[in-house]
Image (cartoon, rainbow, N blue to C red; front, side, top):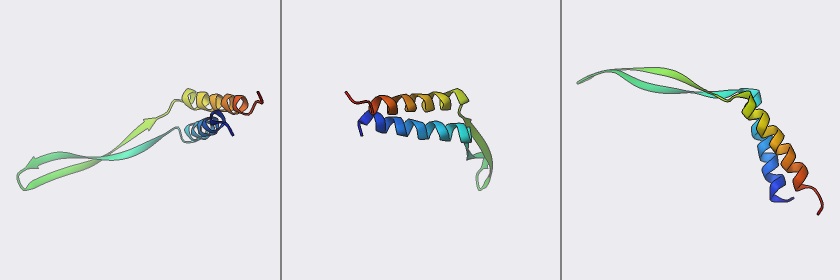
Length: 73
């Protein structure tokens, strides 16, 4: 398989994952009070969203690369 086909398959997988999950979340610990021996912290959950257009473009671009990569010259 040509490199274009391999990159196309990778883009298809990324596009499907981006469309299925729509993003990911992570937890960040922040200090609220830091006064000598007294420390108070809190956990905040943050979310990173992927636009559906991004997933769709990856999917379509991957399909195009697989088709172009498998053409006989």
